[in-house]
Image 1 (cartoon, rainbow, N blue to C red):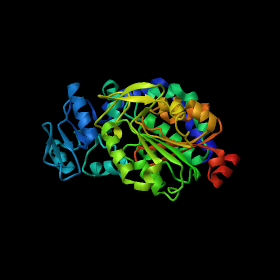
Image 2: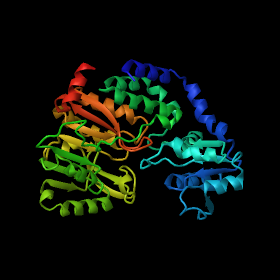
Image 3: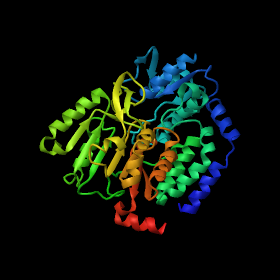
Image 4: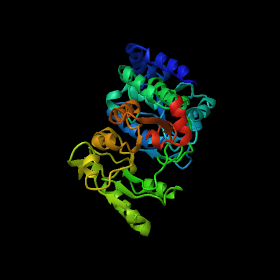
Length: 405
């Protein structure tokens, strides 16, 4: 689609009244499957399904069963709730009458949501809703959940959404942006594209790499981003890598990874440190692996800012950030560094509904000469990354396109 077409689509979406969006979020679940006082099942016995079960029980709603396509789970139970095959549940509960709430929302999937629902329709299930409809109906219990939040909370940000759209550098990114706005409003998963085959963070489709690159790997986990950087064809040419990981279990594995690099690890420095918008200490989750969040949890770690850290180490030329929703605070703490030198930035914008537009506008306010692109690296909206790149570091063709848009 062309920019004018996409802009028209966006304006149509943003013209909806808050009352209309509120009606949808309040009543769509009942319209689709009826009251939760009637029999319903949860489709998907993974992490999201288990979370839904725990939360539903707190509000006095009990699913009749889980349904799951995994034969290893079928004919077992979770906290007393049986797990059945979709066919077995269709026979037991009458597929035409039982409500189904899909609790499958997985970035690692290779199929789309419609592909998961189609076999249920073939079995005769007629009343099917998404986890998002359940979350909209009970927002105090379920929301926010990553980029999923109430559609009525999108519309008051129409001005910022328009400004962010206008700052994107190419129609591919503009279409991704508009599709994500529409998904936030209507939960149409068909709009969300399949993941890109581009390497996350370090693809030369988004930015040229420097021989003397100084990478700040913020949210380093156990070294997966460093590994991706070193494995790329540019990996042998860099100055320093500073990897920041506050979660203690993750940090131990990160340290071991760096030690195992041998000579290649001499320019890689691991820091058990959170980066935010202040200096001091902060809570961090200890046992959530790659999803460990800063700002809550049982472990206390030191926190500093990009600006302060870069006074004692080389300033970054490339900043990668994936820190489970703490990205705005981290960027705020790097405001002076970003404004002064305009490092390339690859930052995740899927941890909160508004990050899609607010982080872009935040970076633009620090360094107005950034060129912005979006790329999805997992399915169902997960791992959506915003690339903010100074024009002199754009790949040649992208730089030409940027000047002509």
